[in-house]
Length: 339
Image (cartoon, rainbow, N blue to C red):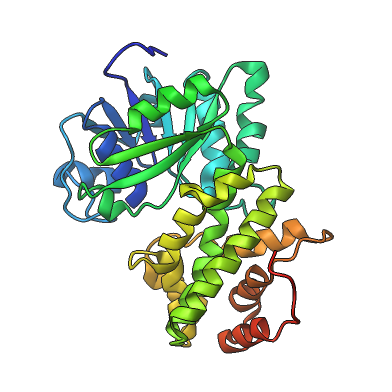
């Protein structure tokens, strides 16, 4: 890595809305490669000089190069930004480790791996190794952020946490420019947890909004949802302070209230009686909260951790429980201390 150079070479893996938005932002200052698996998608982006499939007609800067060649994308670079869905995260880390074993990896995906219930930082530890032993750092960038607003140059703030202070500062300086402000952290666990579980609470918020339950109900769900996220994070060793920051409450509030929130939209459509299969088919994007709810419930099985909102979301999306019943079952729970 060339920490002293102004212009650094970046690779962004994953050309969905968020990966493309990050690539556009990063390439305003640094030569950046954006990789997508689908050659047809890449061809379309090269022709349009934008990503109409996922991000509309926002034009690519001159420093942005598009490719479907993973070997080319990962060669001769200083940092890797991974924005593939969590379902493909392990596979892409295996490829990274085969091709480029030195550049730090910063991921932007959020969720738990289906089947294993592991968070991105746990997958990274398994596939990239212990950074204390192999000198290969990795981390996460997370926070309240919609792709459509970042590319429109609207003010955005994110948290960036990695496995070393040096790499955190190095990576933060690559992201921190123009309309994007970055705050640093060493709590990779907390940032991963906050980014994953907020999607589940957003589905609950969408169900509430879709049923017309009003502002009081939404505020209660967000607040109690944050308590569940903090509870789960503490169980995994996260710093509790992280959940009052951008990667915790900030991301949660945005995802539960914002018009671009895919997970909130899933909840709204469920409240209207649409089937999950139809909702996901029409959405056209990944809604991580659908699968995250199931994996969180799997993760806390045989523990004393209480996550009633997450549990009811799982009951709705996986077991077919009527959304109205789930809401009233939450309201009917016995009186408990708030904390």
